[in-house]
Amino acid sequence: MALLWGGVDCQELAEKFGTPLYVYDTGIIRARCRELRETFLSRWENTRVRYACKAFHTRAMSKLIADEGLGLDVVSMGELYTALSADFPPERIEMNGNAKSHEEISYAIRSNVGRIIVDHPDELPVIARYAKERGRAQKIMIRVAPGVDAHTHAYISTGQTGSKFGFPLDVAEGSMLRQAITYAMQSEHIDLRGLHFHVGSQLFDTDDYTKSLAKIIELMRDLKHIMNFTTHELNVGGGFGAVINPSKPHMPSALYTDAMMTLLHKKCKEYGLEIPRVIIEPGRWIVSEACITLYRVENIKELPGVTYIAVNGGMSDNPRYALYQAEYEAAAVKDPGAAPYDRDGGTHVSIVGKCCESGDILIENAKIMRLEPGDIIGLYNSGAYTFSMSGNYNCLARPAVVFVENGQARVVVERQSLEDLVRGQVI
Ligand code: LLP
Image (cartoon, rainbow, N blue to C red; front, side):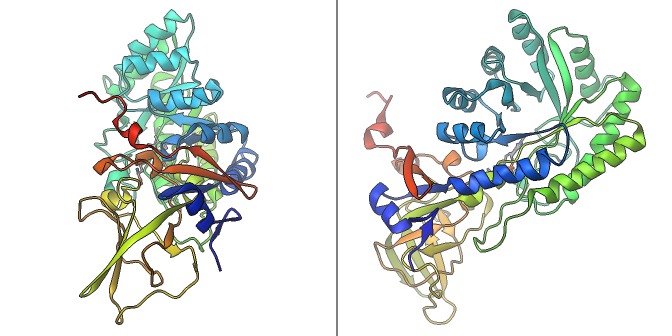
């Protein structure tokens, strides 16, 4: 039984478009967007979704998100430019980032982005200046770090005390947060709408969210009492977990959103606060499970105690094992259901890449059938932070991206050529 992705045979995709190849089933992405509309936007009033495009961003993806009626979270001029080049409505874009340049702020304001999420006090006068030049007030939010250590890899936990992101939760006279809010409230070219926080990424339960949210609602209460500042909008970030095993059901987004919304409604009532507009920023959850990455097996090295299956890509197109020891599952596209190969009872199988590093691993302990050179394998649930984090290490060309829609495949990002690799270089 061949492996189909979005109704298309993966062997044929590999032959037609080459490998490595990122293959996205847009039906899955659309289903995720629909789930957010049905279980969050329709169920809870005055809510918004901004897809965190750092997870996977291309012009075609921007178009898809626009068609699905969601917004975007961008963090750089490049992400913003990509979205605008696909005619993404700017008012549905928010700009995050802990180190925005003046140029990025100016570009965001000129482009009429909906919100700028301020991460440092120095951004405020810059925003005010560029907004004044445009003769308007820019809507902003202030990012705070809730001081909660999320249960995830340390590199993708962002809301802890001492994080490089956001303002510390300190409302003492003269604190960074108090000063920033005062500045924003006094500036006629800044319209401070509320607060933003993001706990971390790849979270599988709601504890970290509710703990963080509880602290933020207390902050909202304190800011109301101390400064008469009303939080009209609250962005609770992204981070919803994506499963690794393709036969497991995905995490329902309502698990996270219902827990947060219920707490928010309860606490706001208790503290006599207006219920703010709530914005979520999921990235990984929307795209991870929609993609299978196809590789060709180059060779197999059977050593005592370990079998290396070396493929024609690796950390250059997916650095996630190297960075976070991220787990994946893979199958041979010619027989995805075949029993895993067991050389002599428990020999370790590693699927490795072709980059010149021992850490260039895709799967450390793979359960996969016996393979031959030339076979195509698919790495499941590999749609988040892979293409977007890919590079040209060892001068490997970046793979193509294919969207599979209604049984048809189309290239949405071309494979880089050798000429692309040297473009812009002079001798
Ligand atoms: N909002 C903000 C402010 C963020 O910093 C992030 C992710 C998100 C939303 C989206 O988080 P998600 O829903 O995708 O978990 N490269 C790492 C993940 C880094 C996440 C950075 N921020 C990885 O491959 O696991």
